[in-house]
Length: 633
Image 1: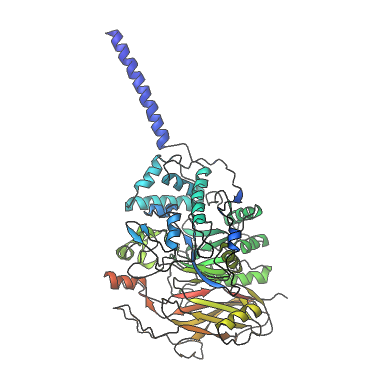
Image 2: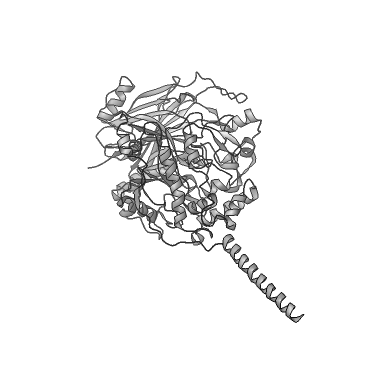
């Protein structure tokens, strides 16, 4: 009996040891060592699949420029917040959608009614490697507990919110900013970037559809957004993108772009969502409280030529509480705590002139763009009506959710009072190629819209003569003046501005064109709005105002008088308040006649009842890049 007992204990000991080994193995699978942060070389190298320069050289060039439409702010299932929201489209799907193909979002096939000419997927570089692990069965740590949890979230609202808030806190809290525990190193980030680059290359069709290698650097500062999208001119790109988990301030971020340039890349950055930056997008001082030196101002000027003035999380031109005298300032307003003029582009453009007067450098000489910031993998999804699917995953996917769901970034607010379909970027480019569109971006010959496809041209020059027609305006504008985004030297008299706007061929007529001027006078920042081109033969009153357009919008049917407003508005203008030697900027704001907002369409077509505080009518609009008057004496 004693011998048998000893054998039993032996086998029991062996079984316990085996169970412990199995448990240890399972534990290492579920909870792998990490995060692994070992440095991995990140050289810039050419990742082009074809000789694009040779192919682009065969595309016809139009020196007078063509108008192209795009969306340069797009998230897919490789962005942590989109994936947590239940989004499954990948970069390849997003580009197919932009070209007009249907893709599946949740359980439904969706497609854009009017395809785009160019697009860029800008997935968050933060947690990009982690998302690769979540998606790919052959990736290290794919079977770990947290990746399993990511995949299990599905449409479980409680899980979605909890996980989103955890990751948002990780990104936004400087003391705790870190990769997730299962991060298996920057090789996984490289693998995710390879997926992105393959989609960029697979879908580039020079002359037809243009794609760009891009990513979003998502610096969070508590609840404030200080985000930038990064774009490369060609496929000379780093092995993987830099994230705010490694580079957690704008100065080091710009240095990362400078390092890419030193190794052969051509790259720029575009800030966005200034409206919820709480002043962090354009701070007044350095982190230590000191004034910015010239190196800082020059770095911003070089690295950030454009800014995104409108997107699905609000408008960043002006705010009605600050610009109370601007009758059109109450447009898709969303801000969090700390309402600050430094969150808005009109004030920032004025600050740029002020910096120029004091330091000789204008760090805020921004051209303007807009995009969607879609988190559904659906670039250009700005088309409202009965098929509108929102851009924030399950937060605003259908009418009922948009009406009653708390807003994900601030549950005290309601989604209906925050979201809008977002905007589009327009560019005047010599051809639909990476080279030409990127160079137009560098030259700031771009403009922004609230999702409509209003056509806008804007030139300025000294002693420009009156033009006979559109073709002459464009020819003289380029030969004797400068287009939007450029500068003129100050002269003794006001320059002549050429202004032309055409309606969206599928949209509403135009109400008016306004000129927005900003300047510094006796050390004080000033601005003025001029109504310069008006539809329906309305007069400009002595105080500069104009009666509202009356197009009899029917709140029951959503119909409006299509004979009201103008198909085209054009003319020349000189500044009656021009002061020789004073630096200034001028940009156009072009307004459509009032039409139904998405909320009114939801009310009419889906039977939704909205509270009284919900905006139901909208005047879609466009904002040109400015033209600057500079005193170079």
